[in-house]
Length: 312
Length: 250
View 1 (tube, rainbow over the protein chains, first blue to last red):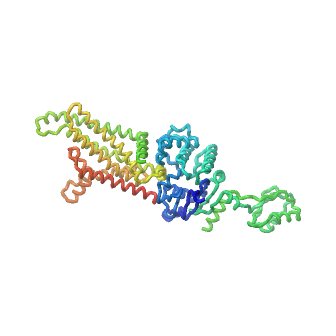
View 2: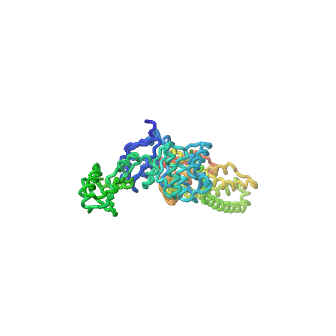
View 3: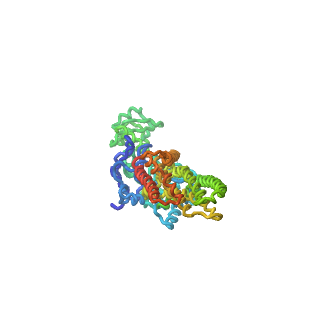
């Protein structure tokens, strides 16, 4: 449905001098999606998010948020955004309540609406007990949570979180990830990270960036499919010398794992299983294990970022 | 929106020791000078009795005190305005304002109002001291008020200049130094133009010092008024442009 499109980004570019931080990126985000931006440091994730939040003006391209162009109607578009930058924008000399009240005021919430919004955001981010404490005296994890509370305070349709889980301990990490998933049900969420488990734990969609370009974009499920195995793990009771395995059709590399186990890497699209089973039966290799090995997200990520890098 | 930003500015100011220290030091020094001026006046009083059209207590105590306060503002303003945008850029809290549905004019006016409120509080506190003399002697309230108004306008123009310079750098100290330099230069321009050349008349005209001299004498000049308003508007306008630019360059 067309009205479900929350963010539409067309051919977005941004240069710093000669360096292209973001190079011709286009994508869309629908309500109810959690989009993870993934990439090594310096890939342009933060720059993209800063442009989405209206903090940085793009050199070229268009950003439409909730039907409002970010450059032509900045106020309407920004009302629909909750943004947490890499470093949470918090005033150390204010208390948590003062900070949130200020942020509510900036987003034009009335007195009663801002009280309700503050109570809700504080409850969601586990800040009920620290409302009257000075932000400067809070730990990094709590400051991060205040930043998240600030971003979701005015219930924006689009929530942009730049590396939201930095500095959190494992328990907080789990809570915040659950919160992000929950937010993703009726908001659109964009988050960036260089941690892969985070993407797997929270996101429905993923975009990988490298050197300012998108190298992959799609649903998390697609990514798993794309990472479909080009590897087989086998266990043999009477293994032949590894050289014999190399002669099987399509095998590119054989890795000896010990204990009669081998990992065979083969060209994609080759049905190695059948040939392998026939050969094992005829030569009495005593095959007791045969399993495709799926490349995990991490492997795929490294492959994608490295291979495109070599081409560029 | 403007008031939300101004209120936050006030809260941050007064929750740091900076504002209280500045107020205390300024008030202490001004009180000392005020007492010295009152003492001088008591010595002179006897000789003034015989004079026709003799200067009163307002001319001899309030006016010099206001002149010193003007110098005080010159030093005080950079210390306050340096925080406005430089500090926020350094602490990266400016992103909150930029990502909120707030236009550059609202940001500039909000912060301007916040810092101006503080400066005006200083001015009023200084003005209250000569007012205390009203219990024992007759004050010329017209002159007193004119002097106070002059200081308020002076503070407004200083704050606007400081605010603009603080948008130019992410280093508060640099913002303070350049503001102090600019304000001093403008002030000195008046003294430097004591020669008779024609160009120096222009310099004298551009100096804020020249325009606040007349007010304590009770001269309420619309040219001076317009000068201060234009001076402030110029720098606030530059600040708004600069903020819009910042999103492009940064």
